[in-house]
Length: 242
Ligand SMILES: NC(=O)c1ccc[n+]([C@@H]2O[C@H](COP(=O)([O-])OP(=O)(O)OC[C@H]3O[C@@H](n4cnc5c(N)ncnc54)[C@H](OP(=O)(O)O)[C@@H]3O)[C@@H](O)[C@H]2O)c1
Image (cartoon, rainbow, N blue to C red):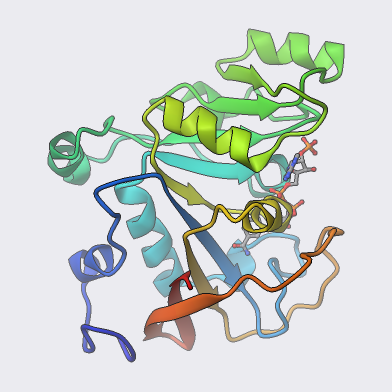
C-alpha cells in the first residue's frame, strides 16, 4: 500500500482487510479496471487483457465477503463468467456474518439474451438472479423460465437501478459488488447508488473500440480516495463516495 492508512507490504489477508464491508447495509461497491486512456477492455474486447495478477487478487478479495455480484448482460456475454462457488477459506467468516456460503450472481438484462447453458447458470451454488423489464421478448422469456435462474420483471419498460437494489436487499443481499460493465455502472452512479469505487489503473493504452454508447451524467459524482495499492505497474485505488 503506497497511500492510505496501512502503508507497507500487504499479503492476501491484508488485501481482504483493505476492502472492509460496513456492518450495516446496503453497500454497493463498483469494481472496474481501466487503461491509461480510460478504456474498460483491451483490443480483444475483454477486461482480462488489460488486467494483471495484482488486479485479479483485489477482484477475488472483494468477492470473498460479498453477498451479490451485480453485472450487466453485456459483461456476461463478453466475459464468459465462470460458476460462482463457495470457497472453503471463507466458510467460517461468511457463516459468522450470517451470509450464504457463496455470493449470488445478479444480472440486468432487458433483452434476456444470455448464455443460459453455461456454467455461470448451471454450476453456481446460488441460483442466479436475472432482472429484466416488465415485457421482455416473449421467446426469450420462455427460454429464461426454463433456465436455472430466478427471473424478476420490473414494473415498467426499463430496469431502474433503485428497483434492482431493492430486489437484492429484499433477499438479504446487502453487500453488493458491481463488476460493471460501463453501461450498468453509469446507471448505478447516475442513480446515486454507488458507495465505493474500487478502480484499478492498468499501465496500458487500448483505444475505445469496445466502449458502449452512454447517456452521460448531468454532473460529476465525486469520490474520495482512501488507499492506493501498487504492484507490477498497476494502481489499485479505493474511493468512497464524498
Ligand atoms: N474493465 C472492467 O473492469 C470491465 C468490467 C465489466 C465489463 N467490461 C467490458 O465492458 C464491455 C461491455 O460493456 P457494456 O457497457 O455493454 O456492459 P454492461 O453494462 O455489462 O452490459 C450492457 C447491457 O446490460 C444491460 N443493462 C446495463 N445497464 C442497464 C440499465 N441501466 N438498464 C437496463 N439494462 C441495462 C443491457 O442488457 P441487454 O443487452 O440484455 O438488454 C445492456 O445492453 C465488454 O467489453 C466487457 O469486457 C469491463
